Image 1: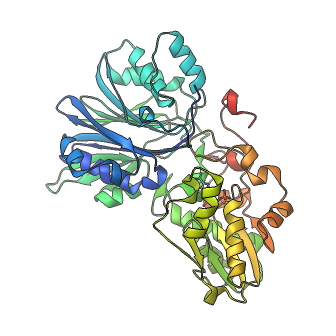
Image 2: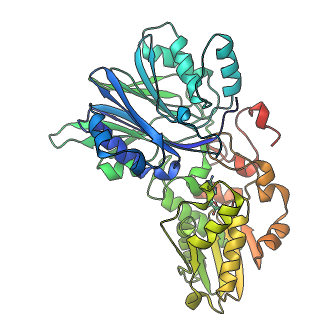
Length: 464
Ligand code: AMP
């Protein structure tokens, strides 16, 4: 059985008469983190109720489903996995009846030792239903003889290697936990109930709180488990605090929504800063700065401000098409670029244009965009990328393609420039990116850019 990389978001609510509805909205706000499946488990009395399915949040849940998911607590999950590995059995939250009662669990991130864990658990008699690494966590908890769920989790989580931001729902509490390296974000908020009291909410990104009128309270710290019950908030550590962290820098480059604060920093601001630094590092004489919508917009604003070159929306995006990235085959991906982006020739004609995008992965999108911009009459096209060359896959929960598909892993800067047919091409430096996120290599994982993986790699993938 092959485990797969996942892009996901989690959400949890405790002490809210509309817990499932809040979770639905929380998932809606985080739909960008996963479009393949969605699920919610609510706590009604001491019973867990589930509804989940393949598709977008708005399609998976009907009004009647939300009415059925009654109770004062709920957790939810959205997921995108690579095509071919989608399966109803992998749709989260996972839900099981254990020795110490019903448990539901949702996971954002990817474990790097899941194959070894699974083999061990199977040899000990565990039965796996799907292929997600998250099932191993449930099995580790299930095997633990303690009746204290916090002890079961506290014993299990140190056995996991890699990225995990978890929400867990039991008959009497909502638990959240974040891996000791802090790969993925996980935040806690408070939602005022109108009578002076508040409910607790947990999410991958703060944009989920904005939608439901909750206030950011704090991050779950790496290596911490927090639980909420009728007495309030309780914090425990399952791993000691570490000076070295592996917060995913790609959350700031591309993955998170710009209206979220991730790792305590506004994503919009960090992206603008990436654009400013990019202008400083590789400025060019030009008439216009245009973003690749929407991913390049904040960086293009920063580039324009720092360079003094006017900003224009030279390419207009049709918003009713999903990200080309999630299409299953190359032929459909190319088609996607054409139907999604429309260059404005009145703006571009005869102009020397700087096109800004957040990242260049396979090079397919950039090549198409440059062709469109040239066809619209631009006299020069200078491509600027607000992150360093993507040279390695991610094993921690971002669906970056295999090394063989990453253009910067195979080709020089000059070759990529020729392939995408730009007049010039520059990337942001690693140092520039770190400056933009106000961090350094002791706090962030930037392995997709610098190959410095902060964990051992899964054996089957290490040579990709
Ligand atoms: P390409 O170079 O054709 O693979 O496409 C690069 C574009 O895909 C960039 O403009 C990004 O905005 C977007 N992108 C980069 N990484 C991801 C990812 N992990 N998931 C979805 N889209 C991505």
